[in-house]
Amino acid sequence: MRHRLLSFLSSLARGAFCAALRTFVTGLVVGVGAMVILRYMGVPVPTPLELLHKLESISRLARILT
Image (spheres, one colour):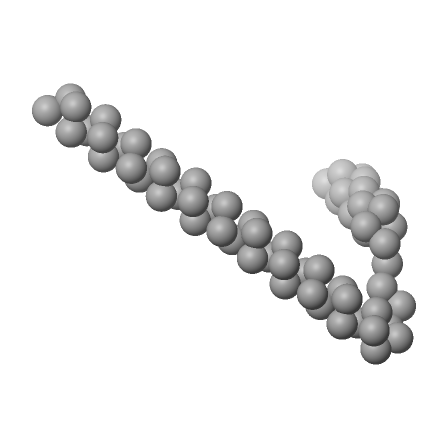
């Protein structure tokens, strides 16, 4: 009985991890592809460091407002 429960939880965790990993990789590929296409079209796209700086500013503003 205990072995079945452990096996079920293990397979559930493995499935959730695989789904999260697939989602992350797909999002990364789509994001990089969109960035490349936008740069090719001449749209000014911020660098990853600029994006992190903007997100940091937003989180600071949220902390101040709450």
